Structure formats: C-alpha cells, structure tokens
Image (cartoon, rainbow, N blue to C red):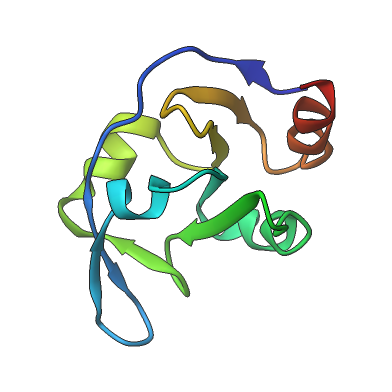
Length: 109
C-alpha cells in the first residue's frame, strides 16, 4: 500500500511530448481538485482509471509531460504515483503496481 506524506509540493517546468507546449507543475495543481502525477511509463495504465471531476492525472515521462531539467525526478523520484491534495500538500506516494491505494486514500477522506 502507498505511504501517506505531508510534504509540500514543488514546482518544475514541463513540456508536452506531443505538442511541445510548456507548462509548470503549479499550473497543473491549481484548482479545487486532487492531482495525481504518474512518474514513468509504468504509471500510464493506473492513471487512465483515476480521472474524475475531482482527480486530474498526468503522466510525467515518455508519451506525457517531459521533465525539463529533471526537477520532477529530483523532487519526487521516478516510478511512483504522487497524489497532491487541493491544499498543495502531498497526500500519498504509491507504487504504480498498486494503483488501488490511490482510490483507497481518496475513499478514506
């Protein structure tokens, strides 16, 4: 199961792999929703099941948003699901092999 965290999220520059459009992590976090960052290709299947009105998932890695400068990897590591709460704090860090832990965390709220 995932591990609950209470650290504040960090910002980083990202670029959309398909369009080349630049964005920042803080832009993805903005709003009254939970954000799930899937760090690495193994996260892609888990992210497709998480998108709802209150959860916005993003793949960071090949086929998704590219980590310009490696700041996302430095801050969060790789090969993990990171759930950012609407208040800007990290709620959960989970293994992509256990995507149900994100849903469990959200149900527990």
